[in-house]
Image 1 (cartoon, helix red, strand yellow):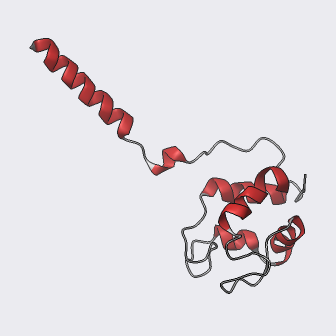
Image 2 (cartoon, helix red, strand yellow; image 1 turned 30 degrees about the horizontal axis):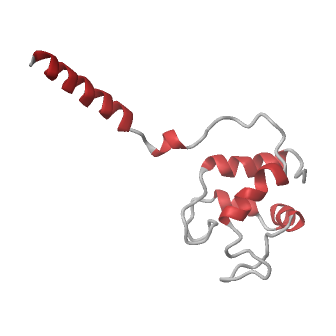
Image 3 (cartoon, helix red, strand yellow; image 1 turned 90 degrees about the horizontal axis):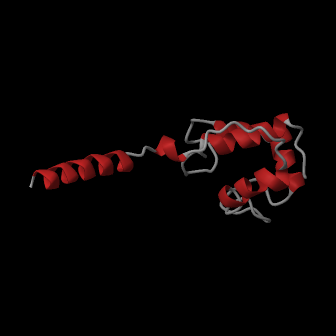
Length: 120
């Protein structure tokens, strides 16, 4: 009986520690150490988070398409794309009406600009 109590206590403590995961634990905050390119890093971010409105032609009131390298590069250089995805203002932030992108994805886009907006 004493051993059963110890096993139950151990199991309870073990399951508590394994299930206590915060959202921050799920976000990869590993610094980017390689050169960021559109094809290898940024395209998937745009495709997964922006294309539903910024298609060609744009829908839902989106002013520009973000379907090609040149369009995304132009949005960084001329349309304040980084300010839009980095904003905490829900009336300004992209994706519009949705939650702000996770910081690790924003950091990849920022790093892409710092690395020279390379395509490949």
